[in-house]
Length: 234
Image (cartoon, rainbow, N blue to C red; front, side, top):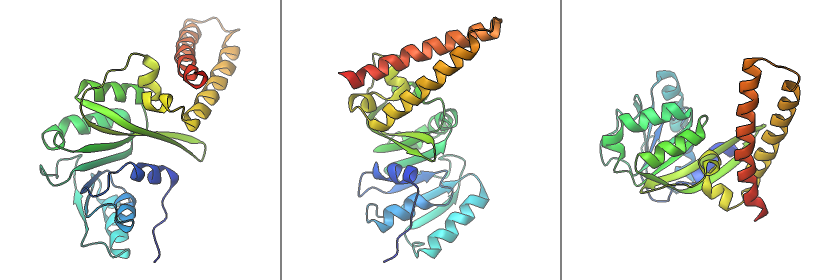
């Protein structure tokens, strides 16, 4: 039987979903994740939601194309607004900026606090996002990271619980990724280190308040990266 082909990023996000749970996908875009998981027999059904009508219509077309309209419902929804308590046990939010994801989680808290798990793939402010999870009663229990077309994507599974990290590097780069010495994270750290060194070299001859501020930022980032890379030498 023909199966949908999805990107490495979406495949890694889907792999974090616990089998057997009903899925709610916020910002579902084309509906690829629920289609993929249903074809693999990992979930019984899903609710695919998006704030924009265009992507939701496309998702609906794809769902019908694969004959899954009895198993995946589409809903126009700002975040989790169209979701009722207890309708799903697993929430997926992938491919959005960290601050937007924080807003969605805060606004949807009455519905989302009873979720068994959240599968999250923030695109920005990732260190801040991990701190947000810790401060709002979530613990990250699984992490992964993939590289696709030159971009690096960390993702995580969070559940209700307590989480407190000791080092800033663990919030920035993911404690579990560091403890597992994840090879893609190491590749990312090395690349970032090289970029920072090249930038510092360019700034060395410039003596303005903004260049001095940027140098200080780069030095702090390098210190955090050094702390992270130390995990790979243990």
